[in-house]
Length: 386
Image (cartoon, rainbow, N blue to C red; front, side, top):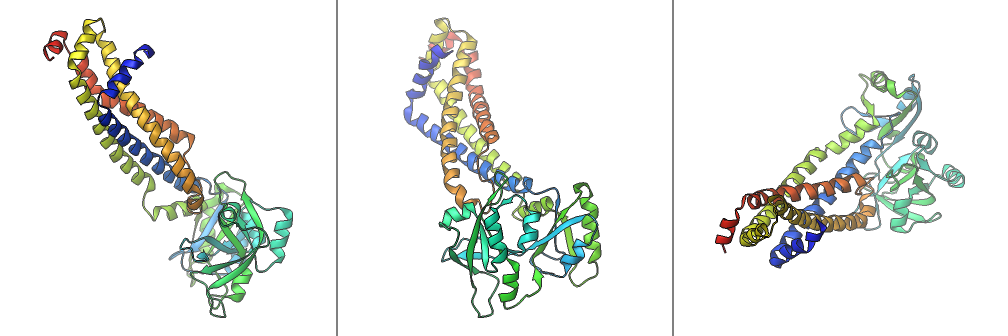
């Protein structure tokens, strides 16, 4: 079949502007496919990275409602809970940037036990534990802003006001952490909860939500029920579930990402299929006489059909490879900025292989009807059309 490649390429060059515009349409379709696949992978990875042995306890009404700090000892006394820690949303911004940084006040010792994937050197860990105004930052975030150990960084909170009336909090970078899990969080700032609670003007003695590490993931539902039962009918009732369910619910607040991405993808590829099929149909109609000559020269019906299909597949694969190449470049460029929101904003090998399969499948589909017409074409009718 390779010996017929010059013939296929010659057919594509026949109407070069039309071929170029069709190629561009296909490239745009696969550029969108690549970007959507990266977004979907980012949302799904956040869920998949959630620990099976971690529970999250939030206020029953809403996560924005705080919980009493005193709940920590109550939760720790429940059978099956091995470590209790907590987080609060800080809403930090660096300098004049509009982008919100993921900043959390946490109790360092228990937090590092609940999240062993956070990797700090022994010296950095010890420095953070003894430094009340210290913070550790993810390597991705440190690389983005050029932060290094010893730097003094000011972060403006959208929520917490200091006793002096300022919303700007200053921290010393005590360490830069990595994450053991590929695609795991390395774009957050963690600082000591005690510093927040001591210096803030209001809300003392409260936290955002609790994170518990449990001894047996199979008992997660029973332990969660026991935690919520402990605080039933209190002034701050709780809702406890697995970390995976918590992150999935948070992601679902923006809608069903998988369904949204799928719907957009179907619409884009359906449009691309119409464009490609129309191009191939016009091409075959213009070459009716030539196809008749090929059959006169001894080309079988199947060979003519294969030539038309090959032309369509070559067109979609060329456009698709161009589109996915642009998508890879765009994802690489945007990954640093978006990683704090989507922990794995990237194109996986599975997405790339699926993209290749789509190129071939759409090429065959686009060329199917024109190829069928070429297959049924009679030599006498083709030559009469000259």
